Image (cartoon, rainbow, N blue to C red; front, side, top):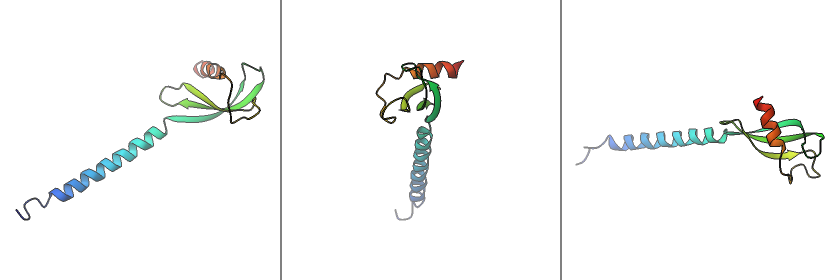
Length: 94
């Protein structure tokens, strides 16, 4: 049985390399699904024009979260109910 399956080892190595490349490509594509966008908008709670960073789902176009907002004492710690997401979504759709 020596030398009968000499092609098996290179075939397995190529299959493993293909799986690794496909996993890397999938991870890269999943990482780009969400996008952080810096926006200027009117805060529905305070009525002031503020700057904030919102997360948008690239696949659906829906704003999902607020990462920062200049209307808050600590802009990076968002504690409001994020009503601006609805306003931003309406503005993006129409």
